[in-house]
Image 1: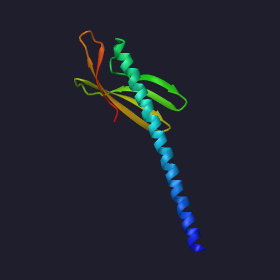
Image 2: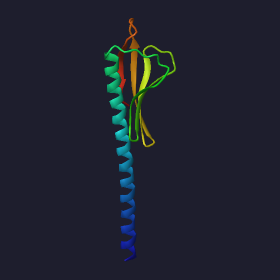
Image 3: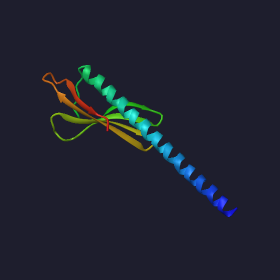
Image 4: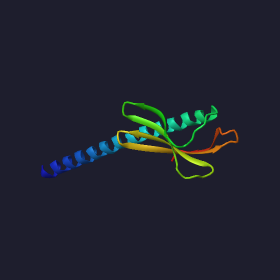
Length: 115
């Protein structure tokens, strides 16, 4: 009986760890999808002929407990590195975006790297 009790308690402990890991993974995936949504929004923003001075973050959306924003890298590189960031209940995710400024100062997407 003692062996059976120890076996049941061990299985219960493993199931609890598995559930906790699954919940954490789901939060991370939700944060990553939110960051990808910010990258799609920024792609549309750039194709619309908009300008950006890179000094302030661009707030894409904030609802419930999710904050999505576009953040510029302070380094002066060409192409310029920006990130679509999403914060979800303390879990954050980023999508890296490289942009180039055209002669008319509009933005052009060079590449998007989701990981």
